[in-house]
Length: 577
Ligand SMILES: *[C@@H]1O[C@H](CO)[C@@H](O)[C@H](O)[C@H]1NC(C)=O
Ligand SMILES: *[C@@H]1O[C@H](CO)[C@@H](O)[C@H](O)[C@H]1NC(C)=O
Ligand SMILES: *[C@@H]1O[C@H](CO)[C@@H](O)[C@H](O)[C@H]1NC(C)=O
Ligand SMILES: *[C@@H]1O[C@H](CO)[C@@H](O)[C@H](O)[C@H]1NC(C)=O
View 1 (cartoon, protein in one colour):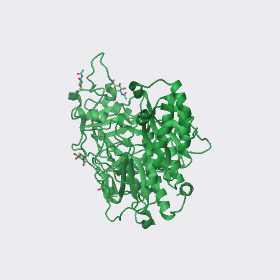
View 2: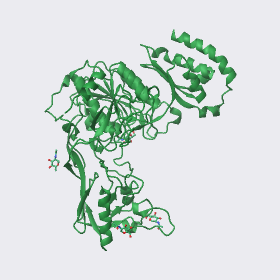
View 3: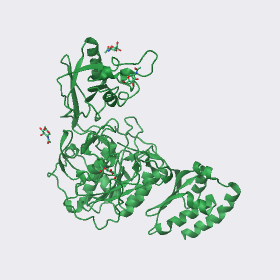
View 4: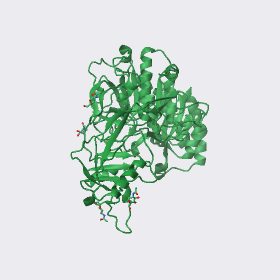
């Protein structure tokens, strides 16, 4: 029936195509861009004929059999009906008028939204009730940057085989050569083969670290003595440590995350048999019919699968929340009751503290202190701003063996960025970086380093100006208690314009300075020359909050396996602690 309708359409439009459009040359093909053609729900077993149907629809606008085959990039059809093809805008527009087509939208790039946290939530190990038998039947699908299966958080000791309902696959590749009974599935998606540049190629292995961190937050097994160079030491674990993980790699280090890949991952995850989907990815707010996460999550919900999404990291301004569909659980980030303080002492005995993740203990009592300004080698008329320690503006002879103070760059939140790396390249002994705006996020530094609030920075500058031989020493980061929770500064805020009557975010969860598994395949600080190895790292973002809420949802489901996505979401939203 469906196919007949398409053929009829084909005949009608072929004449139009002939009269209106000139022949397409190879050059014009490069101009065509991937568009997603969304056609609603795929019926049972539809995927068998989906490809042919989609081909016929495409034929109605491109008018040529082999051209249609060449332009079609992918057919969805397991749960979601639709396809991806390279099109000109006018072709996309024409397709959108097809009776069977709900929407046609250009493929877009979407962003990643970058343990004590479980204790803080009241999930104190061995003190909370768990339904382990049911929990171990729960499969959480994670759409992200892949996974490092060799992390101790994914050790499958004591796990039985995957639940019988599991229909997914383990697609192996470089650095992901197996799955196990904890990570039971792995797939990767990059439909645009033509413009694919990722160095690492066809593999679900995680070179970014985001997916590994998130997956371990949801369902990592207990790992004792976990820490980042001794900072935040304790037992690391996920919220539902007996649950299984299925990884769907949709984000690539160099190519980013794209809408068409995400939709393909949703289509597969739903039919593979996952119980929950966690998506720490989001873009600008789009109408639901052109939002791949909204569409994917909608089809998931129809099959009883709750999708949990991050609210975005562009707060605190209004209208910054993303992932707005009412059928997803949208998660804001809050602090936990632990903060990271990096104390330093000046030569005159003053001490102050900044925020960072500094794993280095000093090897000397005190070091000479200088500033970017004093270390400047910019000659008159030269370019660059030494006061903010910009690359290429300081002389190695003036920095070597010293702690360098860098002023905040006026326009930005922090300094000019990468100051620790720049000072390290000049053989500096440490760095203190002034921040323009207060922050609640701690970052790993490649040399001893501390980020200080604006006023504290000014005091350091005064001290440097007051003496001939300024000195300082930076101590290893320590944790201390703080009042919590409060919503993290960066967390995306409502209201929203797409469906203003629906309040978003729905819920908040820990997303500030969260310790979780580090992929062995990533560099701790993104600098290739930072060769330090550690099994855990600390990250902040609504990306880190989303898996906490996803795991809480899985926890509820382990006691109420028959509850709908809406019931689980409602239970979490209406239960205070
Ligand atoms: C990743 O794979 C490459 C190529 O197979 C190999 O040389 C490298 O050692 C692997 N890395 C890790 C951390 O296993
Ligand atoms: C972390 O390490 C410190 C110092 O070694 C120790 O005093 C503390 O008990 C440890 N905390 C945990 C939770 O293991
Ligand atoms: C300043 O020092 C940097 C790093 O040592 C060097 O790359 C640059 O050429 C120097 N500039 C001048 C003007 O000497
Ligand atoms: C320290 O001296 C430098 C150079 O004269 C100046 O730019 C800076 O404002 C001084 N710092 C303070 C806190 O006065």
